[in-house]
Length: 340
Image 1 (cartoon, rainbow, N blue to C red):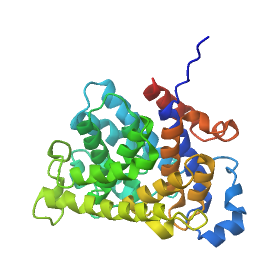
Image 2 (image 1 turned 60 degrees about the vertical axis):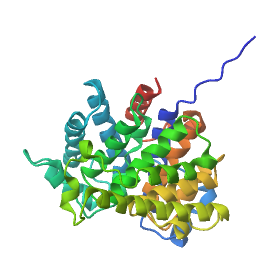
Image 3 (image 1 turned 120 degrees about the vertical axis):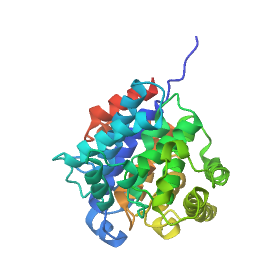
Image 4 (image 1 turned 180 degrees about the horizontal axis):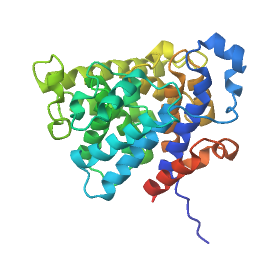
């Protein structure tokens, strides 16, 4: 008698994990660790709130996912084919009455500009902002199948630039999508930081003209290569901090002290990865650690959940949590599409 190993359904796992982390971190954002402990009790025993309400992190992930799905349904993924539906989804989110979860100012300003007919998206994205809103939502780009490395990198950077035009926002979004993709495809997590460092070095001066157009001219850089290199250098610096933190792990210490509070894109990536890698075989503990941080707890935890879910698959999330998450049917629908 032969047995088959069930597929891990990485896309569903990543999207559900992202939303669970988001909901767990929503009540703790803007609190320091002592305040979180006073409110929630021991961090290793934190429970999912009732109801399990998410923030704009999950809402914008779904918006990007729907836009990406529409673009890929229309043919080979290309810049204009992606930009239009994602832009429409972001504007719909901006105008929705459900957009009441303390969204970031950059996203609000940019989406208000994106709704104007005839405005170039390069003039809407905030060129000075590298906030984590750029990469908290990028997981769908890492999960969608059938994309080349060029398409995945271009799509990750373009979706970021619609709101956050800073080169670090672009590079961190590219790296985040890359990490999700590697984990979903079975990459060994212990080698992940090294793979991401190599990817950053290989792409340090590569500006995706086809996808980004003349975005770089909105900054003060002398060339597109100089522009994008600033972003990759920020990412390389925080990856070095992440590598140092993993050499002498301290699970009981606030992860933000090692890799930053996560309000900016590269720190959200690194601190989310740190929580995931500290508790590689305990994904719920990883989510709890990410939610009990002094920084942007919901965004850190949503990235931690995306990494853990991509690695382990959807079976790792207990039904008593997964069945209660807000937008569950939307998350499952996109997950099933990309798991197929």
